[in-house]
Amino acid sequence: MSKAVLTRAASGLSAGLKAREPGRREWLTIIPIVVVCALLPLVIQGRYEVGVMTLILIYAIAAYGLDLVLGHLGLVSVAHAALLTVGAYTLVILTTKYGVGYWWAAIAAVGVTTLAGLLLAGITMRSRGHYFSVSSLAFAAVTVVVITQWTSLTNGASGIYAIPTPPGFDSTVSLFYLSLIVLTAVLVAMHLLTRSTLGRNLRAIHADEVLAASLGINVVATKLKAFTVSAAIVGLAGPLFASWISYITPSSASIMEGFNLLVYVIIGGSATLAGPLVGVALVVGVTEAFRFTELFQTLIFSGIVFLVLLFFRGGVVGSVARAWSRVAVRRRPPEPAVVPESGAGPVALPHLRPVERGEPGKVLFEARSLTKKYGGVTAVSDVSLTAREGEIIGVIGPNGAGKSTLFGLISGVVGGWTGSATFAGRDLRRLAVHERARLGIGRTFQTNRLLADETVLQNLVTAGYLHRPGRGSRSADPGDGFLDAILDLTGLRAKANQVVSGLSIEEQKLVGVGMALAVRPRMLLLDEPFAGLRESETPRLMRLLEWLRDQGMVILLVEHKMRVLMSLCSHVYVLDSGQLIAEGSPDEIVNDPRVISAYLGTKNA
Image (cartoon, rainbow, N blue to C red; front, side, top):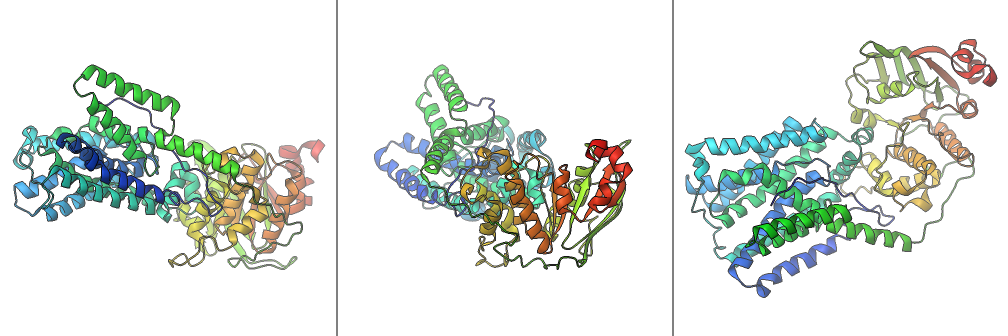
């Protein structure tokens, strides 16, 4: 039944101004799913047919566990069938060999499966893409070998017979309803999880790990949590699968079975509440309908896979949801934009201390002798700089001068450097990217790094949720008015409900600035924010930066537009070939012979 398939995880779609929390309306889909499933045994009463429907529910539970990793995190795993088998074997061994009660054995099965998932995650979470997939494949292969060779415990290739059923659920119909109860609990858990901080963080990591870390998200820890929860969900299916099948062998953990679970999620639609269940029902249902003709079974199954991959790129449910979302967005009237015309902002920033113009602020950031080498190439060489509160500091130089690398050193994206750097009295050398973001360092990137498949407001909520005031309290409001202020300051309120990928380059630049502000930074690193902006958009962003400066924020600005630098910056550093060749006021810089020769040229000078 298994075929090699390409995976394309479906991401979230746009919704209301209250920032789409995936599942705000999806909650309503849980009720009809449960009701329809509950009525099926009353309509289809054959023992075999009810057994097939029970298997669909059990596989769906496991598929939701996989979807947490595949759809929400973007990691392709073929190890989940092996995790399912680990849970099944745990129940079988404890009940048949050691006489443990069924429910205690089931609890132990979930625990062992979770530990197995934690072990796999701990080993592989720092790997990405196909490296993780190969690691999961190896885990599945090792699981099969261990179960096959450990004959004293597992009976090896002969398998284990006479598996007990759950007490009180001895009939086929009762096992169906027990599986439905567990599936309902999983659906509710998935709904709540996707709306939680963990769900937001997973979507950010799925979109861009570097961006996620710069927003203050601990990427490795979040991956570890997600995979552990995923394994626990699969563990719930293990005992049910063992009771349903009545005879278990090592083949249940095979790589092919792992690919089967992948197919279920992809066909139904990853990162959707109903997708995994629909995918399992469609694939297993068609396979069983044509079980007597192996040739037609294979052809029809392959046809379904190809049709879905060609015409339903987000899976069946994902494609329908995407189409419906487009219609809903077109019908929703845009909110009027509120564009501040003066330098004054509409809201105070409590994490900053306003600085009187003309008075030197407190030193917030200081770097000494920063050096970064890539083999024999020195990207940044012995660069020192100081930044005070309430300053906009320019960093200029020709392409390849080391400006973006310098920002990478400061933000933590680039490691392996020498020298010293302190921010607010803290040594940055031992701090990871997410720790620096939480300390108060925000940044944008030279090329737009955004959550492209989410709306503008969703991007801002994801960026700001970890940094909201009182985030340790359950009553903390993720939208305390600060995000509304960012929408107004950037002029993006009218675009708040539009998907970012549909915005112009200029608007995407502003979204990037808005996300950096949502982190509530004390120092903001802006890497060519004016590049690509129309002349009409430039004054708006300049006013915003001036207002942030007056609020006490430090802004390090990499920019090629000298008119902007001359107007905004109080101090400018000039890099060339990784070295600091000049520093001073804008007037001093434009008249410096070294800067004229290396960067400005006689015409600009």
